[in-house]
Image 1 (tube, rainbow, N blue to C red):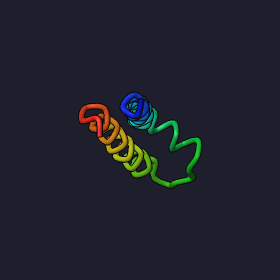
Image 2 (tube, helix red, strand yellow; image 1 turned 90 degrees about the vertical axis):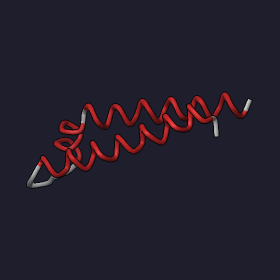
Image 3 (tube, rainbow, N blue to C red; image 1 turned 60 degrees about the vertical axis):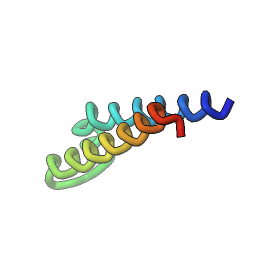
Length: 63
């Protein structure tokens, strides 16, 4: 039962990470008032990549 829950959490993390990478520019425009949109979107893309990586490792290794 715990393995199924961990896999589900990992898949959700991967989905959120991909969403951050794909929609980084629109999320930055909507929520942040940065003068430079490129820096904000770069930060969100990096965060999304790390979240997706953690979720993928969680699914792969079944920690």
